[in-house]
Length: 341
Image 1 (cartoon, rainbow, N blue to C red):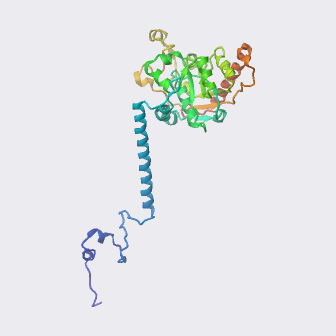
Image 2 (image 1 turned 135 degrees about the vertical axis):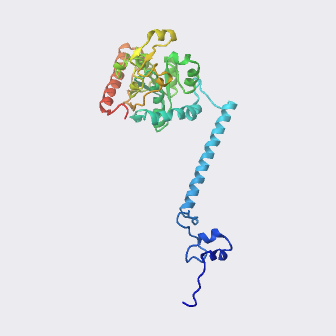
Image 3 (image 1 turned 135 degrees about the horizontal axis):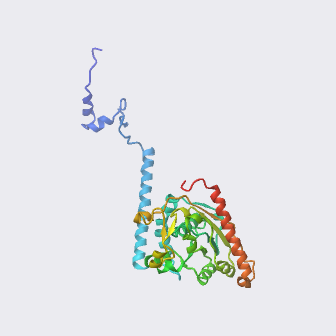
């Protein structure tokens, strides 16, 4: 013990080549040059350790962002130079997929939290006519239906909706509707799309459906003269009934100002618990929980060509589709635990 010599702590600095950082990172008994971190300080790690894996993940993330940015710039270049395709109806598939669908998807997934059932009833290829109920004061159900088909179908199919004349009379809405693949609700356009193998959507209730009072929610209105059945028969495509629950409550329509509707040239002017009392804020839809169910397809390819002109057959098939949608609506309402959850 007499020969023992006390070495001051600061003396490590001299043996580490004057580097305080090296002295702090050298642990006890590691004179062989290995490195250890003190408590509270990050470990530099060795190759192949978790920190190296984290760095690789960060690199992959950066590469992903670079690809997205490059894709976005290429998209903008095509928009500016006009190097993109639209079909004879004005449908712009690239714009729909990358912009319109991306804008609607958060509303679909986070706000209305749409649950989809029976998507397998929509064929993977060839034409099909989806017939759905219509509700909600504003036609948001058509947009949510379009996202539901594209995002849930294994083949990623696009829904081409048939819209009323009013949609194509509005300045901005007209262009967006055309770009999104919608077209005028006429038999000629619908048949051409179906023969081209497209999935076409129609809501036969029209303004009678979305403009009905809240007291008549989920009660289907007239389906017209069955023109959609005639179109499906001529094209030989299946009819897929579709029932949407949740849209009726987004704008509970408790009144209709017919005077204002005539002045504005609209089918109705809705009065809800929030609109027009809260101004623009009253136009925000309530965050209801939606369910969209596609029913068993009704085949039409077994009928003769002249069947499309048979009024009794039109009536029977129209009534069959309507009853299937109404029955499914009642079933979904019984199963629903809450409007919002």
